[in-house]
Length: 507
Ligand SMILES: [Zn+2]
Image (cartoon, rainbow, N blue to C red):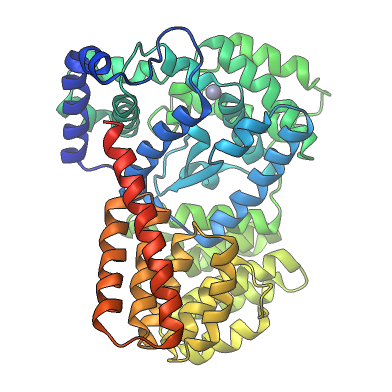
């Protein structure tokens, strides 16, 4: 959640800019966007970067490697599906970020941002019953981006400076997350105006449904996921559950949309009903629920749920979800003995199901690390594999474990290999920085800190770190290997400075 002070300053920027922007634009010869000409992909991407730079700093932003990987697998399949159907023009494919930012928020929401960024609340992951349901929402949002709905909305913003469009979207996001807070800093009319700037037209919504459905089925997801997700939204809409389903506010279920959906997926007469989730999905959804700030009382209740009478009669996926929830809740409550006992039951239950048992082991390592039980974490890690083929969750756990064991050299190679192919992975750079520091390789540690800032588009922060690294390299007597590092730092500093200048010019 953005802090009230941040919202207030965003809104102030918007209101001031509303009065001065047209003149400023004319004087500075910024590219005009209101001539009916489409915004270029590059201009849209820059607005998106402005927005996500703020979102990365929002305390709600969460880079959870397990949830991130789960969402990423669905997202990459959808992008491939969109390419295969010719719905993703090569220029957008190349220029846009295609990145999903997770927010800790427990409400059900997903939203497309300019430049190929998407926001996804953990609350949505927590309520879907299958990958297919999640895919149906992501495919819809993806289509808003590929069909340039966002640039069309922004083009309607009449010649506003790009930074201001970004501020407006941030303000509307904040208002949609917390109407009470928005009301405290905005009059009702202003809040509504900010919100309406973000709303797509009915035609755009129907197009996103139609093309999104084609993309998700092309990608191999079950059409039934589209139907059951719709039913879930309809049910929430009947209950008037707009508080926990902000998605419904931006995506009203009009009769046209429902009719369109029914013509696409003929009802077979057999009610879909609540689908049984796979064991892996049930565990991932459970994780999303626990990580979305549920409050201590709920964590306490969840952590004892496996002791309740009905537990034994639940299906295996439901039992896995209850155990996962209880173990992670106990970890959050720092009741490590109980968390370890619970995760052992989960490990036993998931034996024989490769994906589910991997999820159980990843959770077990997390709990062992939180409990500072390094021998247990190490023995569990061995069952998760090693070497250069490690997936991201395992890689980051291994780095944390080896650094805390005082053997960072055992993780540095894998991390270096990873950042060479994933240069914008802030968490991997952060882990690398900690490992270098432990080895007293201060120069490299400080440069890695600069790369963390680069990945989060904070160029002022990156310049600061790269300058600090350069000062170290000038002062200290360098090892031969450090000379190479020093020249890399120079190059990175120049890049960060030039990005910072570009940013200042956009104002
Ligand atoms: Zn939509």
